[in-house]
Image (cartoon, rainbow, N blue to C red; front, side):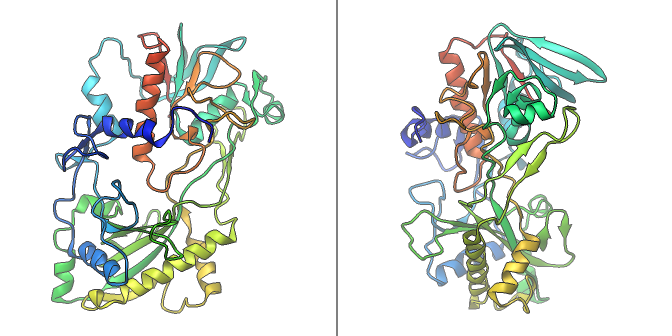
Length: 421
């Protein structure tokens, strides 16, 4: 997409750099990184049955979704260390807390970036009721995510001039792409109860309560709805031994749920300011399901899951389908269900996109266009949404961004990282 240095060959080393892969090193995986990637120690019988059922209806078994091929069914790996989620903070930040050139302030709200003309000289932030400023001699690194990075740029006068003027914010740079190009995966659930039987107890035995309580998935499937196994998958499935229909709504009783997710949805949304007050949340317009093609693919995904769940593999413990429900049959009824229960996949990207076109916010060096001394290093710089989870790609962007900063001779104790909470 016209961004030198960001080809597959260029960024694969950064994926490998951060990874400590339990299975060992190979062409796709690294073992020297800080970030622990492990196999699930004891996947539930239900998760194993999901993979078996997918193979039974014609999909290949895939032991590594991050290897030579993405399509197929398998058990997901986890970012876990010593039985706990190994987050980016746990992997990269906690081990270096005592570094003398690192100061961390939590519970702070960044209110704006500071400029002298178009040169970035620091950030302003609120902490414990007091306004502070952190000034730098070289660069400010903005890593506030796909919602708050564009919000902070706009609050600071970088964005669409007409929108900023409507908010009575002085314009530093007229950059119309700020907050545009919002992309995210959308998903819908298919949930079944588990019937009471000896097999049912075996099916849920060994389920990690921490995984279950968070609604996370153990097994998955990538496929192309037109059946072309060599094509880029357009659907991703997450299977878990929990009843779930929407965020925050977990049903009582035993069951299993698969969520059907679009890997490359057509929806393009936006982030804009609701007011010039930094304490006010931005306006987030996702535009899910604006494309009928996306709806049709989700309908196809539900039908595929119904076919999978009604294989003999699930016969001994499959109970009533409670979502969408046995009475939701026609394409029209499935579309109505999708439009009611479709939710975010929590993978927002794109609102400070990298590129060279007029709507690009940062250049291939991640420098904000029109100003000096300011970079954005987070998922908001992705020009398009990746066809899978965004956690590892975002950490790759951090690794790549760090090298870009160092290459510019900017790494020192005078570089500030503005993170909006």
